[in-house]
Image (tube, rainbow, N blue to C red):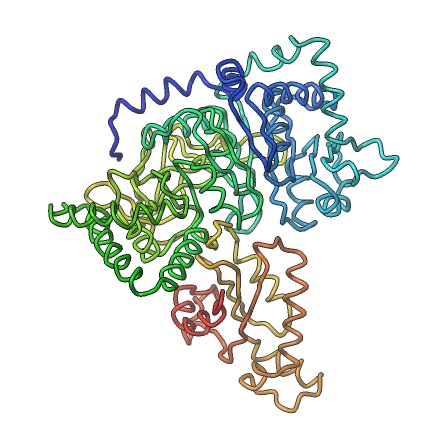
Length: 612
């Protein structure tokens, strides 16, 4: 079911079927050679320069032995070197994969062994420290490239600096430019392009493999829904291990020859938006929550003579926004009030903040509270939700500025089919559905059924106009307000490994960090307490005992060492109650009833996020 003209699918598919990453880079370097491509700080690469450096790195990677179909792992921030070497791998037909910089050594070992990466690219000493303990366990690994040359181990022939690799490749390219062109000419849109690791319901990462067609159909289809001008400015700020940034920053940027402004500091995103004057921007919920909080503080600081007209303008714009967001007609008098508020108050305010160039702002990766959307909408910052996953190359459903429903995630993009199972699970089919998961033997295993339908694991509803709302998750994943996917079962298992702990509930869905509730084992905890010489062994007393608290703090700290930063448990609370099927917190098979627990401990959970 969809909302867009059926002819759009054929148009999008016809265009995307002609595109590969190397073809688009060649087009941009030919037609827009002197136009800016990447700006980082005070340094800018043009499209012509970007392709020349890509050519040099392509030849360099070829010398290192990187071959078609092999995987190249990258652990690096969003700096120009990431774009260049990522594009270079694509020219060889290799599959690039960015690992989050927050991964622990244990997690690095898993993805490195599973991917069987033959080349690894690291930023510097911090990344090398996490990779070093696992390097000997990677038989497929040929070479390690390090951007910061000062971090290179001495006398180890496995390592080469990024600069030396590029210099060697440049010499080869200058001697024989045709070799670079020959490397990519037979690549097809159906060939694999990139891979991302994403958590499954068990907590084990899965390698999601995308094709050139996946990446560029997504770019084409989204642009059909919400067009942006060629060569427009855009901002890259999310990790390139995140499907949204990989699609928007690496692939849509190529398709539209965008001028990408790279931002590695989240605090600099809004100021960079003001400087770059980007017309479109995707933000995770946490960013919009912070913007709303900043606006509230700004408004509260105004003297009454300024604040009252602003609040009146906000109320007028909000009335119009709510009606449009509900799919209802806006009466002429409401339209006029909103237009007056926009012209007199709201547009000047956005201009003072440098946000007046924004025409399409979107939110995804996690749910966002409706009150945040409405508060920003009252200032003319119309944040519209999208929905998707790594397996759908990012955005699968979209709200557009001229047709949206607040609280929904929109309607399917052109060419994407969507249906609901009897239990409400969302199934999708179309050109953005990924190739499959990487198997340990290097094969790509299809995850769709025989008719091409992908079970997403999300539960939803469709309204009469085809707008999708996400109501639940069939798969047990936490998605933080920063869009990080976290498998709670893994964290809970680490906590339950201690004899004091009977059950643990990891929390963090829609929140900025992970917390936990811990229920003590009614049999083992008193035994442990007696061994420690505690005066009382009653569970209620033990839940408040400082020695128990200290022991659990050590347990959490030990678990956090094995977890990425986004997974780490920042705070926890010990509950005095034992959870059981009889009291209703557990199923008969002793599984957590998450909804019951979240409702039962709502106040205590809220306290864990006080001052977040």
